[in-house]
Length: 307
Image (cartoon, rainbow, N blue to C red):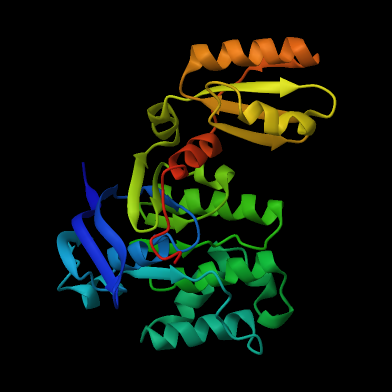
């Protein structure tokens, strides 16, 4: 197994705040690895440490064959970093933005690199359009193009699809999978469950702690949840009562239905069946989702900075 990232015992403090605790992680070359977790959970800090943009306070490991504690300058040369907020220049054209970025990297063949990147990202026809006039989806594509100019081996994407429409998100993920197939390793943080399911593997962080990692199916299976669907009229009226039933650990509203989950399958089934008969509600067996698993993981997580 060829690992692009292999770290263990990684820690990071900001003052007296311990924001990442003993992180251990392996990411394969060419893998799309997703980071999920609530705001302030340490996702961005973890990714930046893995990519050489932040130096860990302790721990050990490698990124692209370089030591994460001592070789951050070498790692950064091989990384493309796309921030959540569009950070290019609105008053420059698409081509001018890319040319400026190429000059910052000191690329000798920058005109050829810009032309090739424009073509690969489908931006050639818009090369003379001002960046400030682009829609969110096209700005996103330009930001990705700027990350790829220097042909990185590792891409860091920090909530890259926030604020773009569903079609732009789908097109973006098609491009990400194309890059992955070409051998580029990709780390992406996201809050969208459908995007998480597009990743090859995932890590779920909560307040500096790694709670789970693996494929989406592995993470769901590890929680050992049983999920049932409650169907009927005005199901929202029964949420509070259902939460008090034996075996119920979480209740989530999906339109006119309720998804009810718990670990004690027999107890949960018996309680819901009886409740459904009493209130003329239809009870059907469901399949635990990635969202169910993550909500379950968060039940015992505590924000160390909430006070």
